[in-house]
Each structure stands twice: as C-alpha cells, then as structure tokens.
Length: 301
Image (tube, rainbow, N blue to C red; front, side, top):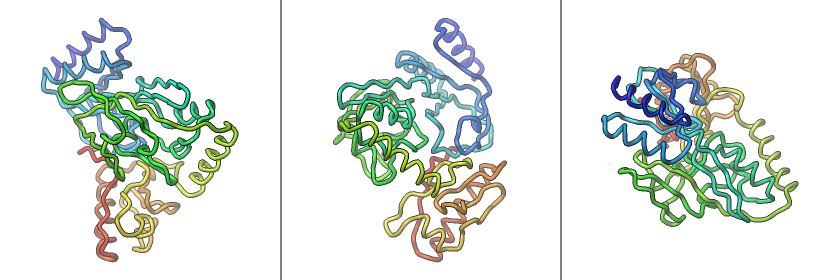
C-alpha cells in the first residue's frame, strides 16, 4: 500500500487538480458519523482523473470504495486498507430545455434547486434526500411517491475494465431500491427529463415536502436515512413500532422516537452498536409479525 500511495501522490503532483487526502476517518464522510480510518481518499474532478486512479488501483490490486455524500453507508470502525474515491467534485449540472444532466457527485438538493429556478417540475421528491445523483441512480432512490426511475432518460457508467457506456431508462432495470448497477460500476452522470411549470409552484411543493420531513423525520440526528427497505407486507416503521421497539437503544444507536424506520446515532455510536440494533430489530419484528426486514443501508465491514 505504501508504494501505491507514493504513486498516487506522484500523479497528483503532476496534476494540481487531483486532490488526495491520507489517513482519513470515514466518520467525517458519512451522515451516520461512523467509520474508521482509510489510508487514502481521492477526489477526482473529471473522468480522466477517475480513470487514471482506477488504473493505478487495478495495477496494485488495491480495493476501492466509491462514495458520494456517504448518506446510505454504515462503515466499520476498524482500519480499512482501501482507497476511497469521493465523487463530490464531479458535481456539474447542466440544463437544456426540459433535460437536466448532472454528474454523479451532484447533490440531489442542488439538482432540485437548478430545476426549480429553471421552472422544471418532477424532481421535487428528491429535494430533501441527502444523497448524490450517482448513489440515487444505483439504488433508485425515492421519496413521497417519486423515484429516480420516473425521471431518468440516460445514465453514463464506467464499468469494470474502465469501459464507459450509456444506458437508457429501460436498460437500467430499475425496481424498488434497485438498478442493474453494482459495486463494479461507477455512475458518471445521468440525464433526467422534467416538465415546465411556474417556479413558485415548484418552490411551494419543495417547501411543503421539507416541512413534512422536519415534522416526521429525525433529520437533526446522524443517520443513514431509512434503515430498512419497505417489506412486501406493511411498512418497516409501522412494524417496528408495533413490535414495541420505538426508542429502543443499544449503546449509542437508537430506534428513532420520531420515526421508527430510522436508526440514529445519539452520540458516539459504534458500528457494532448499529449493527447489533439492526439485527435485534430484524429478529424482534420477525418473531412478532413474521415479516423479514432487509437493511436499505449499505454495510461496509
């Protein structure tokens, strides 16, 4: 790993736009505020830098993890001998009539703001989701009746082997919290199609959704959003509450008293605290209701 880090630093020295950080704590880059140190984090600002870094990882056999806003991650507290690719600097957004093209690192809130100012409706549902376009495409993120699959036209992806391909909506295999893309694929950008509407009407809907979030969700506390996927029968939050788990805690991890579908970090929660609570909730809900809950959060051990 030392030779690999030296190689990356040398490459960064030749390219002032290539930002790297050493010995980074993942808890500073996840909304759960949990995660141990990683040896190297790279912040590419274009596809060329990204491809160059991946080529170096492949050459040295270094495992890599791609992140956006870290809003759907639960990362182990151990030391991780991996390289993290943080896509936050690849965040350009372009508007062309009713089509918005956004790079993978663009936050959904930023894209929604562009849409609102441009008088384009259809992306309001995503305005409060604390993720980026790349992660949203991979998991077909959604809220308040809307999903990414409803607006995506095309997705540009760097696949294993560094080949860049484009897929139309039908080819993405979008389903509930699912797409065809996996950990070997890196979403580079996506184009979405919206529809014209008065900016003030769009703003009003966004403000209404934001108020509902503040009222119903524990947005002031560190979490990874909804912890569990919606089961085939019922809703995760209702099943958890019916099982008497609202407010139940293990260590610093707690089932939110505001919304039972969220596990929150009350301060100093460890990876093991959250994982133990997830397992306890799953077992308790199954024993009481017969329903199997599946985590929506991506777990990095």
